[in-house]
Image (cartoon, rainbow, N blue to C red; front, side, top):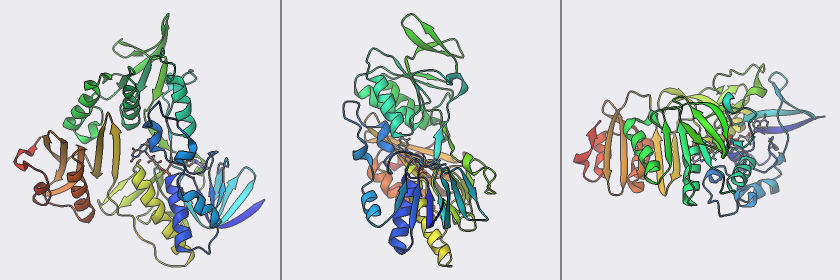
Length: 407
Ligand SMILES: Cc1cc2nc3c(=O)[nH]c(=O)nc-3n(C[C@H](O)[C@H](O)[C@H](O)COP(=O)(O)OP(=O)(O)OC[C@H]3O[C@@H](n4cnc5c(N)ncnc54)[C@H](O)[C@@H]3O)c2cc1C
C-alpha cells in the first residue's frame, strides 16, 4: 500500500506528541499521521524511574492528556509500526506494510539504551527507557531477597537508586567515572555523590565492570580493581544513542544524531526534534544534542511549526532555546539550565536550603545548577532565557551572595 498524509511524524513520544499538537493547532486542515514502533499511545517517561515501588505503574496514568483530543481531531496513530527507511526524493517513509508519503516529515525517534558487551545476553539485566523496561525492572526488584546493582550513576541510575532507597532497599551504584555528573564540575559531582552516600547507597566510583560472576548466594559484578559487588538484578543506565539506524543510506547526515540546521531542518521538507537531533543553537552559538524532556517538547513544537510553514511556503523559525533538565533524587530536586563547554568558571553558594552553582564565561553567566533552591533557580533560568546575564544581575537573587566564591 502507499498511503499519504500531509504531515508524517515518526516517533510517538514527547517530541512527536508536541509536533502533532502543533500541526493540529496551526493547520487543522492538514492530515497528520504519527508512526510509532511502540505498542502504546504517547506516554510520559520521566515517572518510569521515579514512581514509588509500592504504587502501581499504570500506562493509563502515564498517557499524555492531549492524546484523546488529537484522536478526535483525526490524528492517526500507527502503533507497533517501525519506520524502516526514508526515500527523500519520493518523499516517502518505508514501513513493513508499504510506504507512507508526506508533504512534510518530522522525525522524532529519540534515543535507545546502550548495553555494554559485558552484559550482553545475561538474564536479569535491564535498561530503563520504555514502559515495558520499567515494568520488567520493577517486577525483578519486587523479590526483596535479590540484591540490586545499578551500573551508571547518571540521572536514570541515580533516580532508580533513590526509588529503591525509599523502600528501605540496599543498592549499589557503580560508575566508571571517578566523579559522577563530572561535566558539571567537581563540586557538583561531590555534592551528588554525597547525596547518595548519605542515605546509604553504596558507591563504587572510578571503577569499570570487567565481568559478571556467580557465587553460591547469587550473582556479582567484578570491578577492574577486583572488588565484587552483589548484583542479582542489574540496571544498566550507561547512556543512550540516537535511534537513527533506520535513516542510514537515506541521504540525511547522521553524526551522533540527525544533523539539522538552526530551523531543525534535516533536508528539504524534513525536520527533526528531540533527543535524536544535533543542531546549531544560535542562543549559545554551538552545535548540541540534548537528551532532556523540555528540549524534546520545545523542539517538537518548532519542528512542526516549520513543517507547516514549509507546506505553506513560509519562512521557518530558529530553535534558540536554553537547555534545561530536572531530576528528583532522595527528596531533592536537581535542576540545570544553560550550556557548558567545560571551560567555565564555577561559583558555588551553599546554605541550609541547598546548593547553587553558577557557571561563568568572562562576565556572563551561561549556566546554573541547583540542588533545591527552587525559587532562586527559577529566576536565574528566566534571566538566562533573555540573555547571558552578568553575575551582578544574578547574584542579588542569591542571599549571602558574598559567599559566592570562585572554585
Ligand atoms: C526513565 C526516564 C526518566 C527520565 N526523567 C527525566 C527527567 O526527570 N527530566 C528530564 O528532563 N528528562 C528526563 N528523561 C528524558 C526524557 O524522557 C527524554 O529526553 C525524552 O523522552 C525524549 O523525547 P523524544 O520524543 O525525543 O524521544 P523518545 O522519548 O526516545 O521517543 C522516541 C520514540 O520513537 C520511537 N521510535 C524509535 N525508532 C523508531 C522507528 N524507526 N519507527 C517508529 N518509531 C520509532 C521510540 O520507540 C520512542 O517511542 C527521562 C527519560 C527516561 C527514560
